[in-house]
Length: 209
Image (cartoon, rainbow, N blue to C red):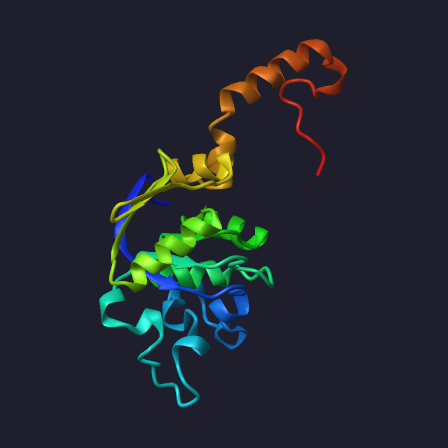
């Protein structure tokens, strides 16, 4: 994954609570392969009317929000089912950060594993940011190293799990995170061989399948 450090991008307001994973990517679109992309189906049933035509008043369809890389929403974003495709849809739709007061736990984990930052900002700060965006504000800067969000004259501190922060800053998967401790793991194994030699197979002995 591409490391996430500082992102300055167009932000899109989504002043809705409880945006769940079925809204982020309706289940009927999840049969396609990951390589085909999910961005076209992001928030499909909110962005489009019954005839499939885009709703011109929906935030993501507004011309001034084209190419947005940051989404700002209200509390409990990403609740619902555990479908990882919800994170796929956001990433494929061009987003690298979602700012909200709270997130679904599984969604947050899926987001981080796909290089998407779930930044938890206090509710009052989110409301101020939404108001600024609705008044015509556009560009927001998210600094993962400093844990800050800046927009216009506003500047706020956000929260994210420290392990997830480390993964995002380095562009690491869970395997990469484990490998970053390789020296400590090897040192522990070497010491454990000395403490408990009976627990280790003799050198060159293959383990039974």
